[in-house]
Amino acid sequence: MDFRRCAFDRLNRTAVVFPLILPAEVWRRYKTDPLYHCTFVETMRVVVGLLLLLHGLCGSGAQGEAGGLGEVAEINQNTDPKHAAEESTKQTTKQTTSDIWTELRALRDMVVELNVHMELLQRENSDLQTRLSSSESRTDQLERENAEKPKVAFYTALTDAGHLGPYNTDITLKYSKVFTNIGNAYNPSTGFFTAPVKGVYYLQFTVFGYHAGNTAVYVYKNNQRIMANWEHTNNMVHKYITKSLVLELTAGDEIHLVLPSGNSIFDSSGNQSTFSGSLLFTL
Image 1 (cartoon, rainbow, N blue to C red):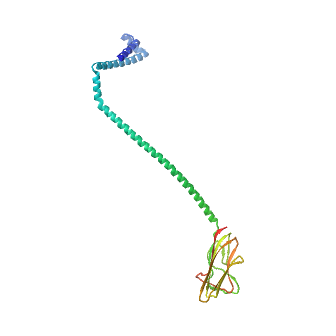
Image 2: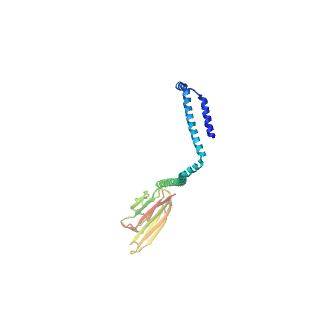
Image 3: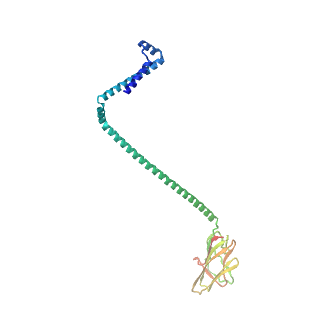
């Protein structure tokens, strides 16, 4: 009843705006006055809407007085299956949405874990790159040092002539067959090895006595004898003398071998008597 009263009040207010006017006058104002035209159209719309609303309210009120509660119950009963289907759809949608969000959260966690793992790999790669760069720098440094380091090594044999000696005086042995002479520190014309740099050198010699009474050799550093070796043989025995030396030499020091007077040695294409040496390291 309250809704009906409101509707009638709305109609009364509308009547105040448009009091009773003859149809000819209404038509004249409608055609000539734009403001009246707009107001009239809008008011007609309101009136029609209120009439429709009033009609609906009256119908629903009549139904309510005639036992509308039973019809409402019947309507509710008729719409229960649809309502149940809608509820089921809502529940399914809600569950599906929940599952999607669960999967998205799992994917997010996986991406975060992969990013952390990627950062660790990048750090490890950076460390490896740093270590590799350091190793390459160290290798370059060692290569430069090795290139700058003098290289000294020689290996020689005495002669192909066979017996040498005995003589009435000491003679310097000139090992004329040069197989290796890196650094050119050995001179086959003089038989002298000259140290090119200060360092520690390894030297070795072998002399062979063949059908000779005595075989001997001296080792000289500059003009000083530092080693003497002898072997006595008869005509049927072969004798070898092999010695090694590790000497600290300064640049310009000379090493040579001497055959003492009254002794002989033997060499041939078999290279039985040899003299060799190399630089171990510089000082």
